[in-house]
Image (cartoon, rainbow, N blue to C red; front, side):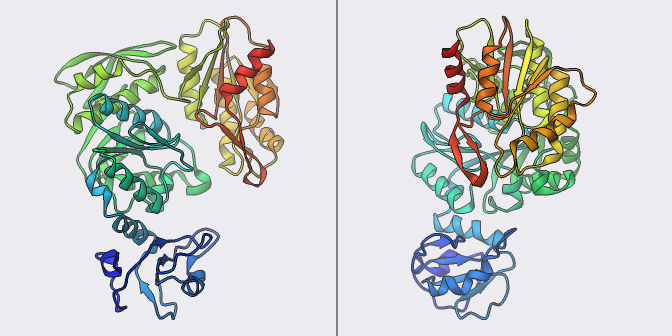
Length: 477
């Protein structure tokens, strides 16, 4: 690709046009001669400091935000915004060949995106998926390291989706991905908001910053679909400029649920959009999954599909990995694996399970290291208020001492009378839970969900699949 073609609409330069062999913002890998290096300032490293070195290693030019005194520099006002636009151009703007559906919010993103993909696939379309658990191109599964990929990886993935014949790409759009402008060149057909509860304050600092980061999605979409049971959703409807549709379980909305019946394996309700009423059966438990399914119906209608078609497709869908997922035991007790790692998510899943429980609800949970520490005692309080017994353990400790994390978690149990045990090693804790299970118990393994690893000190990642650990424990019984 020629340089002028790459930077068209993004930057201007007096440099001679030349052949470009690649584009990168990473100084760590091998530099490809003739590539363009984009200088991005991060929290700990500023790419501008490496610009001269990158030219010496063979880069054809550097894109920067201020004059570095270099012969082959291209100055733009915002390199973080320019990088995804350059990546999009490098891959031939594949985002323009796809209908993009973006879902943002604290909880529910994975369930909603997964179900949307399954519904569209059921309608006969080839669909791409980008999310927390994995990326998918049709039936092909591609491992992922983050919810919203870095720009180069994102547009490379879009190119593969477009080339594979995907019509739609549905993706979880994280607050950090929005704030870091990773989706800068994207325009979404639909942008969905689920809810906003305390999370990622280690990144955003305040809830207001977190709110504003999520809001960015609605500046780059045609139509918003917003949950107005959430106060932040109500606020968005007053602040955003794009057209929107609303959904709710407890409020008057464009799409709402009535006569809700909750069960341990799913929910039933009457869907009402003011034009028609339809009975809905959705095979995932909890009031929050009534909300999630409404979001899917609303999104699909914005895309042009009648609610009755979407509702009928729900009958074929049986859960999402790591989201209230029942782990087979063959015993007289139940084990459920869920990704709940915020206080609100923990309340949602435990209250949903408790609704239909015949025995005790026992919650095994921990908190991640090097993440927002203020939510640790809140997690304990949420668990204590919604479970009959707690097993407090480790999650992904990263570079923190697991026992120190647990000490902070247990502060939230002050004044609570819910019994608990403390077992730092998560494998040992799961074995203990299975060994001590009683008839009709429901053991909720919270926090890991779809993850099949643990992250220890130094970023060391070890294989850890809770389904396998449960199977090990069952063999010892």
